[in-house]
Length: 291
Image (cartoon, helix red, strand yellow):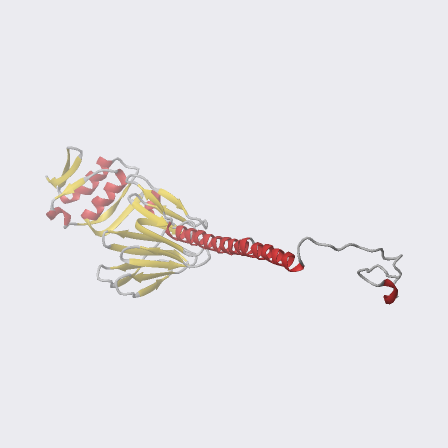
């Protein structure tokens, strides 16, 4: 008697066919075809999806780093280039408040520049004119002018920097004055004054300081053997006027003082009479001439 063939001979293997029923594993495609289709699908996934995602992530990372670098560089450049300019016009005094609390009391016709954002890295002002500085203690503080530089840590001092004239007067603390021309320096203390000539040479003078502030801050102006054209220029700044004088008159030397509380005509009379001079207002200009 013939027996029916089965995929597995359960009896010969010792497995009870009642526990594992017969399963039909018939496929329309061969195993080779199935594996080929599956491999093609996996390869398509690897090539079309995964590398572009990794490539995109890397690009975004590089772009982000570059953007951060550009922003940081831009902010650094801006902080170093951004400059604030303070003017004290003719006929007025003005107090410039600096970022650290230091102040510059500016005389008429003065200009001060500084970098507010960069200030706490480097305390530096560019200045032309006349000002009384009160410097808070801290890092080095430097005032830069055409003829010289003044360095301090914490002190009060007056700087006069106009048209080739540069004079620093120390009131408190200690001040170092440096010639821009040749780099020579001079340290001065209270009641001392350092001047720099156009050729860079320096001069030290002992002065008697009656108050803790410069006279001009109290509207008083003192001159000792000063070329009279410089006195006229100071009057122009304090009163906001224009004064003209001939070359011969400009060579005269003046010793004296005036108060800004006086009227302009009173000041001009006081200045001109000792020299036999007079003045006329012509087309808005005060013309000084011999009487």
